Image (cartoon, rainbow, N blue to C red; front, side):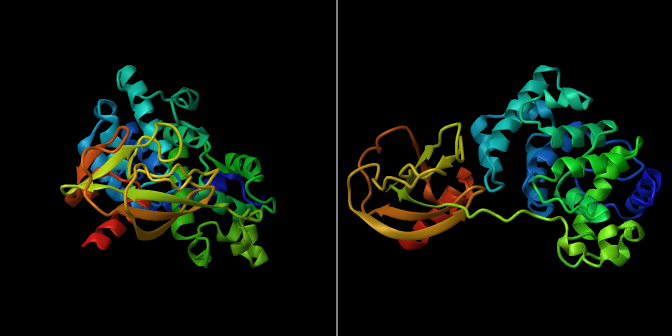
Length: 348
């Protein structure tokens, strides 16, 4: 690298001081660090999700549970329902486990990366982000935006995901001892607004003169990615059972796909196998259409079956009747919310 670490970090921080995004979980440059609870909550929400998608969820969570001890005291079902639509539902379960651990420690987050890593659900990235942003520790923070900036800056030819140790080492080499949190957020902002995946705005980039990918004339080629493997396609069924204006909902097992969430009954589909196709009870079932959904490791085509008559009694197994006209409040995962929308349209 032609430029020194100090030169790179100064350029990045000067740019951040002028162009930092105003985000509800952030403190502006030059102001005291934000509440660790807000930093941690935002970082968990932002994993695999966009800033635009997270803003409303963050506002609702912090209005309802303004401190980590408030969140720790919340009912599991309430938190899972509030999370519905953000996806990757294991994050919500880990969120509760972590909040309860911090509450048991007096509501105080550890300040070090090592201490944060010991909390439930905090991986290397989240622990580094909270340590740097909330506590001013020197930590190396690498998300997808940072990966893009750094691989272009150094024209790193190694493909993802195997390149990640090298990316972390290169990021470590340019992270300053002071203002590491601002530096990390600056790289995130640069990746989100300037060094974008397509059509990067190189003329606005503070590192344009130092960027090897720009010198090569092909910044969009980085980061290099290994060929994607085809996702398996699964088939399954969901069942709409109605009685007196209420629909039967079940709660999925705590562990596994969409764990702990309210859902329509289904036929046991999973990431590894198609559903068995059998309804939860005998009756006349009408075809209500199909919805598709793409998970991390597989895609699913879910058929909807609607019981043609109101049920007498309860279906077998645990569950609850939920008012159809309040189905939006049930906190169904996106997949089952789509199926519920189909059912309501079919029966309108």
